[in-house]
Each structure stands twice: as C-alpha cells, then as structure tokens.
Image (cartoon, rainbow, N blue to C red; front, side):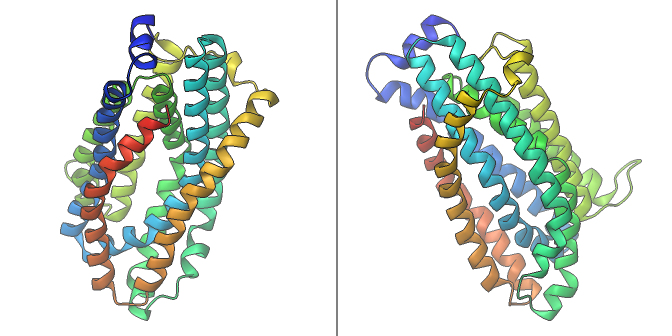
Length: 306
C-alpha cells in the first residue's frame, strides 16, 4: 500500500475512512448472499427438497466456518495495528502467519466436515419424510462443499488481511468474479446443460467449490505475486510461535463469538427439522431474503475492526 493511501486511512477523522473501508465490505457481504440466493433460485427450480437440503446443511457449515472467521478477525486486527504503528515488516509477517494458520485449519475442518457430514445430520430430530427425502441430499451437498473448504478459508484470510491493510476494494472485485462464475455454473451443473450431466444439488455444491477455489487462488496470487496489500513471502508461512500466540489469543474469543451466532441458527434448525420438507424449504428461502437486510450492518462492523 502506498504511504498516501495509508495516511488517508490512519490519519484525520473517523467518518471518512470508515465509509471508505465499509462500503466495499457491504458490497462484498451482499455478494456473499448472492452465492446463497443463486443456489436457492436454481435449486428451487430443480426441487423443493434440494432447497430444504441446503437449509439443513447451512447451519453446520457455518458452525465450522466460524472458527476460521475468528482467526481471520485476529489477523486483520494485528495487520491493522502494525500498519498503524508503521511496522510494515511485522504486518507482512503476521499476514503470512495468519494465512498459513487459517488454511491449515481449513484442511483439518475439511476432513472433519467431509467424514462427519452424515453423522452430524443424523443427529437432527428429523420428521420421517425429511429424514428420507431431504437429509441425504444435504449430506451430498456438504461432502462436496467441504472439499473446497481450504480454498474458501484462503479467500477469507485474503479478504481479512487486505481489510487490515486498508484495502477493501480488491477483495470486493475478486468476490465479484467468484460470484459471477458461480451464477454461470449453477444452472449448467444443476440441470446438465451442454456436455455436463444433470447433477442436481451436487452440481450446486461443485459450482460453489469451483467458484470459491478460483477466488481463493486469485487472493493468494494477490498476496504473493503483486504489490497490492501485504507483501507475503513463502518464508512468512513458517510457523512463528510469537505471532501464532497473538493470533490464537485474539482469535479464540472471536471464534467463540462467531460460533455463538451459528449455534443459535443451529438450534432454530433443530426445531424446523421436525416439520415436513415444504416447511424447511420455505424457512431456507426466507432466511436468504432476511440476510439481505442485516448484512450491510455487518460490513460497517468489520470496517471498525481495522
């Protein structure tokens, strides 16, 4: 980041830099909703049970992602602190440490999620018709989704670290490309357009994984191969306990806070799952519309972390 850009963010009043940081985050959050809305839209045209399936899968997925989100918040905060102290070297190092830590966590949680999807879903007190028609579809979706979790965590880390550096527009642009790819792939893979076979809900999962993987790889390239944001080098990935301790110290409380929201969603889903598949599908569609209302506030909240 240029010194002029850094000075514009770290000096002067709060209103202008807060807006400067927040509006791209708000757009990014809305693009995040676009992932879910695209899946729900095309799966709704495929079958109501498929919409219900992603409604059951989502709280479990969010519960695991919450851990990565917490440590990304820690990395973003530390990068912002080092930038504010004009310590670019430490900011670059902690960025590399955060990226390595979060992606490693993503690999572990990917394995847990892949092999634990069906056992976790079996714990739902499901209505018999839901257990027969919806839960197996949710498991199919989750197993594919979790294969791409390390790349998703890589993109999340990239976004958080860029945010800590004061650049929220680059992650927004990368997210836009990723969402556009997902929107294009969804109908192709779900319904089997062209040379692709009809994959149904698994097609929605593959589309999401491919789009997230592209976003993650582009994000890593930006960190390692450009002068935009932190200048991360391979050597920065080597674990350094002094930095990791700081990441864990700040990240654990943040992860627990993120998990609390996911737990509330999970508890509500436990209640909803006792109804028939049509109710679950309606609940899932309603949730996606509601998220359009509160996610802009999340953008301003994330901006204050920097």
